[in-house]
Image 1 (cartoon, rainbow, N blue to C red):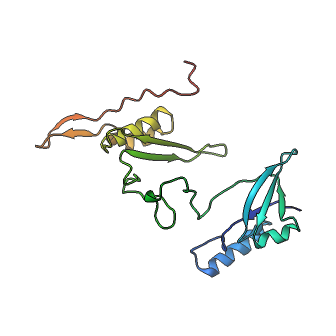
Image 2: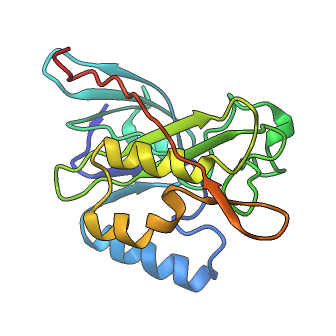
Image 3: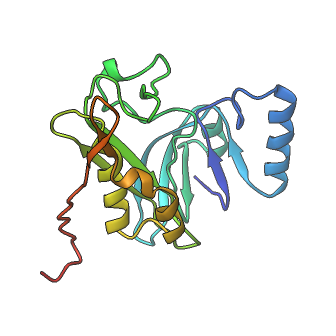
Length: 199
């Protein structure tokens, strides 16, 4: 068993797949020069939390041989990441392309899943936490989507004042008649029940 301070384990044959080989090779050299133990074409089969807080990894592939006869590695911190391989096995095949990526329309909607929409919010700062929202418009209409999405982001405090001003026109889209005159608007009412609400 090997204890590695900075392991990077990838099931891929390159740390920059799809890039020119010269670029990928140079990047690999620079990463290794920083003291990172890079194991390519190697998979993590399973993990085990040890009593001392460290994580034991069971490896498979060429990089496993460097860990000794039992093909295990112990690390202080294990961060699983999916890299170039999407983690979309839970999705119906009809919603995926040949590479396993989710098919999306012009507005990141999923064709065939009417009214379903998802938004990701990246974390801010060193302690920032990334968040996500998935919503379903019952009648499948797209016109309520912008207002509902912006309303959720605003209610949860995930939108800055500047972003709210720039996107304000989308918060309550106008409804026009056949002559083009504004006859109303789509307004979202969002009674969000938060887990941190004392009520």
